[in-house]
Image (tube, rainbow, N blue to C red; front, top):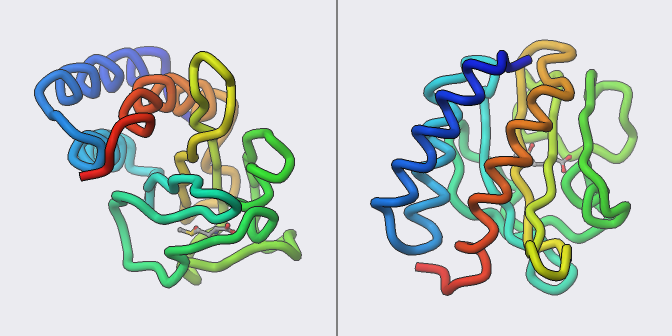
Length: 159
Ligand code: SME
């Protein structure tokens, strides 16, 4: 859960950071660092970039993960693309189609990053939390706003 004030403050900080950070990966990493730094329930947060039918892990903050390449349809991340919709998972232990990054993870949210003109999926913001039900509609709304800010960077070259 994110309060309106937290969301406002964080988006302001992300706007400032993006304004002074050229390039895709540096900008994405700056945004991920701000999210993880300001919101303690984000225990892992990163961006996957869609390339054909594979999701490629980009910049992230949190523990190392083996899931650097996820096929569309696999796990929560791949399901978001296959179903063309965000995922908010209260308790990952209830899922069959789940790729564990950390044994401590209980909840997960995936918000799609879309091309603003075509609505085509460019990638996604993925976050894990250690508590059941860590993420709700307020997190989804915040991450949608972050996704809209990152979309132009995903349309540009990677660094
Ligand atoms: N749990 C994700 C895999 C990515 S890690 O959480 C970083 C999934 O099921 O797709």
